Length: 79
Image (cartoon, rainbow, N blue to C red; front, side, top):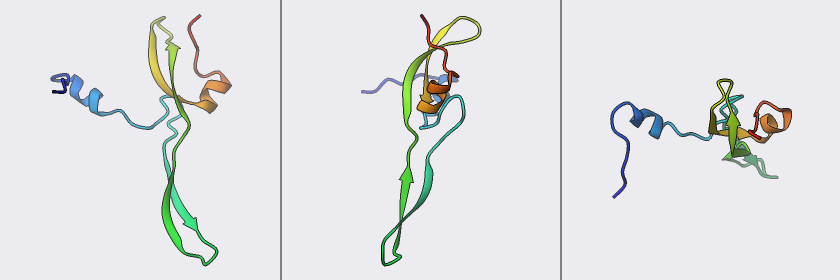
């Protein structure tokens, strides 16, 4: 049996997506193109990492951030 939150928290529970919390980078869709110019659908996923982030108000929370945002310093890691 899986326990899920009730009420308002249900939206937040179900809203987990493969999207960066800082820049909004999400999956991209395109085609694999063969030498014979056959096209098949494919998807590129962003390189997301689950990291701890120090908010402006001083609280620490887990966020999903792409490696570009981590590298450029948008994610402030707690000491």
